[in-house]
Image 1: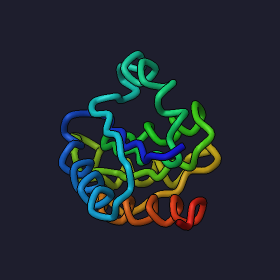
Image 2: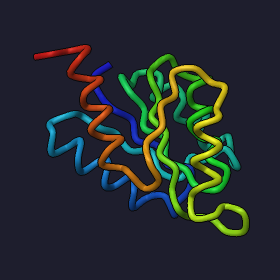
Image 3: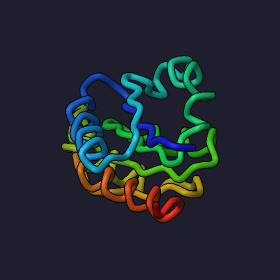
Length: 135
């Protein structure tokens, strides 16, 4: 387990993911990005599930109802950092619905940062990686 996985639910979440990826790269943390792997097309997530199981930490980025961190947490043993995004329409309310969904997740090992905070998620992921491997 030597990398952080950054997973987005949809293409609209990509800018937040790129912020997380750039931050991790700057910090010298190996990272692999998986874009457009949302639960609306669960086969896209399941197609990379074996790879995600090798991650030390997973950052799951999603708007709309924010279900991605909960689903990923049920599939892998690593900690999952949820990042709600301000994308979506209708009752998505600029990311508030995704934030509330992530905060009320019943899955274990899920932590949540603020809306659109790819940088903060990356910093937490880096801290977890360094705690497990302080070299």
